[in-house]
Amino acid sequence: MARAMLEYTKTVLNKVSFDATLFCREVQKALQRLLPYEIEELKIFIHSLVQQNPELDQCLIYLKP
Image 1 (cartoon, rainbow, N blue to C red):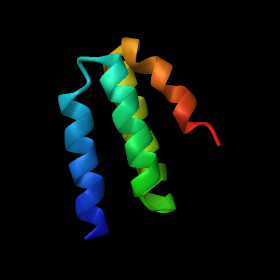
Image 2 (image 1 turned 90 degrees about the vertical axis):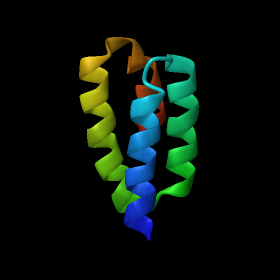
Image 3 (image 1 turned 180 degrees about the vertical axis):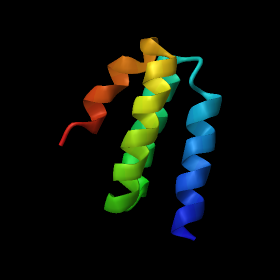
Image 4 (image 1 turned 135 degrees about the horizontal axis):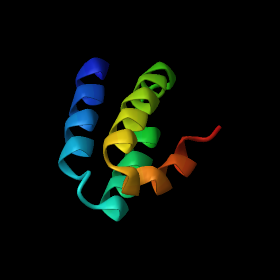
């Protein structure tokens, strides 16, 4: 079940990656809902999205410990 939430979160982030504000909001929600090991995997995924869409880099502040 938890794995499904991570995959759902990735899908949502892909779909909202056109808008940095919306993307940041979804990143914040994901960080509240996911388990610690899932957050680590999500960070890798977000970094790859940021490489494709540099305007999303403002959301990286939420990934800092």
